[in-house]
Length: 135
Image (cartoon, rainbow, N blue to C red; front, side, top):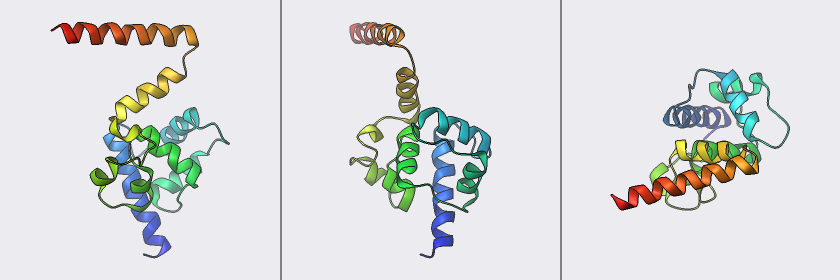
């Protein structure tokens, strides 16, 4: 596959992963903002996000792994394609691929809380699990 096709295929998979995670694949501004919230390295520009979305560029491996973790897809699938479900059963996204995209986002949100509020959230979830188990 030539590099132009690789970039276009990556773009299609990125757009699909964004849709599945309930994000618009039409907003490079939102992609850049959501990415930069989660990424510890140098932030990306809206222009870079647009290039990913239109198939003009592929992010570095470090950035690609973070996108995959955020969107709950295997990094290998996001970069190279193939059968998403077969790859998702492995360790493609660092063990997080077994969670739905909304769960991965929730975990990222939880990590942004201070320790006191994280503890409250944990206790609340434990309480909900106990209530659900008693049904």
